[in-house]
Image 1 (cartoon, rainbow, N blue to C red):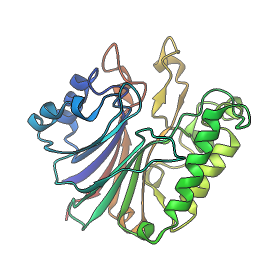
Image 2 (image 1 turned 90 degrees about the vertical axis):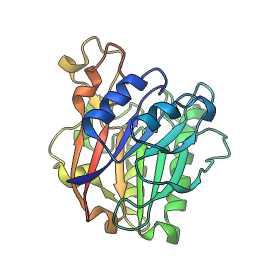
Image 3 (image 1 turned 45 degrees about the horizontal axis):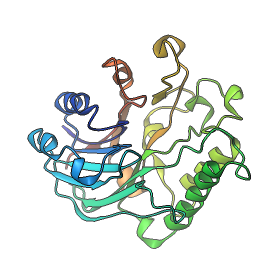
Length: 270
């Protein structure tokens, strides 16, 4: 038996609640962290999650856009959220939980996608993304991030060559440009240090993706994916992580799936 934490950009929780409930019934994670819930707090389908066995929720929603939520079998306390770059969008929520190894602070992020043009001088969305990453770097250097922390979400960056279908082809495409990948690597290795829980268990020479564009006529056949969704932890938390998995089949579970799939990190049960 293990404990598990999942991140999933669901691209509208109300539209895809049936898909989410099917996933919860099949995989029984202990904590589910959702991005792009695309609803206000009062619109969040709390009753459905309670009936599924997830009575504890931390929701930071926004009408029609963005929005993040944590649902849990375990109690959530100290719920808070942070605004980045002085832009009031719902892109972060955090909560304290204990899944058996002591207090653990969960941070759920939806990092800005960045638009289409990888030039912050002419693209304010890309400028926002880079500013968001800069703010994270400064914040992660604070003493609270030395231990007992797990961050997850849609980071909108595929940092390594084998996190994308075509490294050379995507070097000028937002999510895999050098300025973004270097910024994310600086976050991973800087400050107190993080462990990428997926790559802890999946070698860097193996291609893995968590997102496939809606634009592809046959996502599975073309397989032009990117690993945009991540789970990181401080070393003291990471030492209990014994497996990680990307649920690739979820991209084709319904005729209207999210373009992202769930990413699972599994931990020892004390």
